[in-house]
Length: 78
Image (cartoon, rainbow, N blue to C red; front, side, top):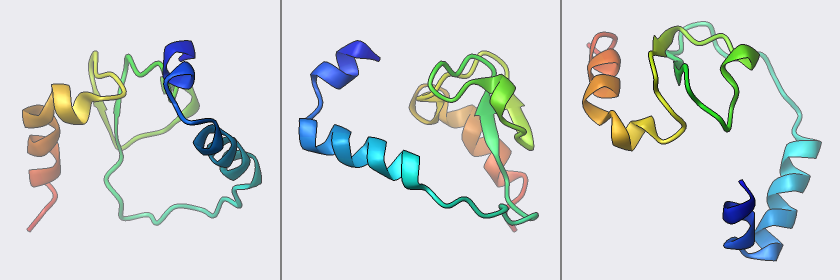
């Protein structure tokens, strides 16, 4: 995380932190597909309730495990 912050523009970091602090959350729709990795170090797995878990999936699994994520999405798309 430190390396990411060091390589990121200060104005963007300020904006992102402010956006997170001021975010007004609303309940999510009930018909969404929420795919989350069990090894995500950015959004910790014990803090979320996804509809599908990807065992060993990390924060960038949409790239590193694209085929698996695509299969899960395809199961729900008509």
